[in-house]
Length: 159
Image (cartoon, rainbow, N blue to C red):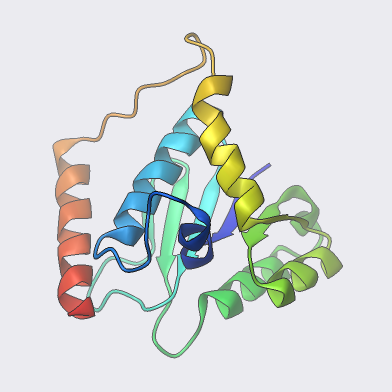
């Protein structure tokens, strides 16, 4: 079952990434990309405060990261995504710490999970995968350059 995730809410639930880190989104995206590669799950993550002039959305394997523009919130974008899914929402899990988002998603048939619950799932994922199921996540030089460029722009924007 694919996931729709409120990125900044999830960062707030992780013990080793802080919202004050200049590369917090990058750290989360890399962790989610690894989780997606290990589990085969598709993930769409939304972040507030879009990257000016940056690529949006970013697609890497089964991970899609959206940086929502200054005029919207990630919560709004997640609810719009669930609304667009219509009956297919029942096939998705929405991850957030915002009760309004979770209630909206549940009313539209999606499964819901709090960020602390998903953070626990992230922590368990490596131990659950067997050697034959685990996949090494190797980025191409172009993907590395793309990520470095994106997050350099994001760090400059946050200053």
